[in-house]
Image 1 (tube, each protein chain N blue to C red):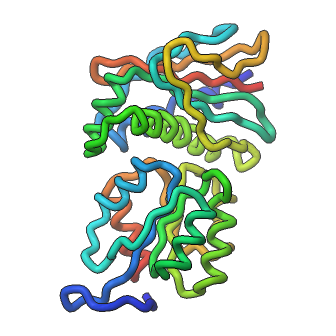
Image 2: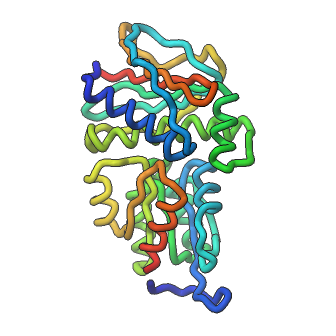
Image 3: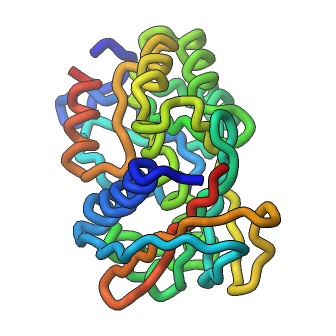
Length: 148
Length: 131
């Protein structure tokens, strides 16, 4: 479960990522809670969390959004591998930044990446997730935070 | 800074190695750094590759990610400093807690830059490192 202040940490991390990396802020929708696995987009970067909290944080986005984000980063490789690299790096950056508030016992894994819109998401039965909707330019993505 | 660099357009040249498990980040750092005197001699995607590349290329300046497979950046810094105490290491990591930054500096890093970063922040951090 997440406390309000902890949720704010992830919202601010997401906002900061887009502001700094894409020089164009994202609009963050109202976070909501759901049970079970939320739907995902084509590319999903997953960070496993261990230490004083356990669970997963993942960033999921459509290819079209990642393509524009890569352009804003002056990147000229738009291959499948680069899309995978990017979602992993976004998930890693937002999760790593959260240690500013959670501390070093919030241990983050290296990213793993899932592709396709129906991958097997790592999720404990009955586990609830906070979904943070991200709207950037004309695209929508999500940050999913599922911690016990 | 001290180093074994040669000359580049009248300026002392320094060898740069970039270590990050993200190809995008490695290319971004290479593209964004604006120091003519820095010559990229190698890149690595984890700590094990970095130690091998370091032995082959003997860089003067290293940018180092921390969260990487096989060997993380903190352990890698220890190996690189043991091989060449004068190496200048800039950690570039998403890990934003103070304890991690302190640990990296105690291992021998000379600077710490948090991801995400702007080009200006990167160049200021490298300039500080090379002062």
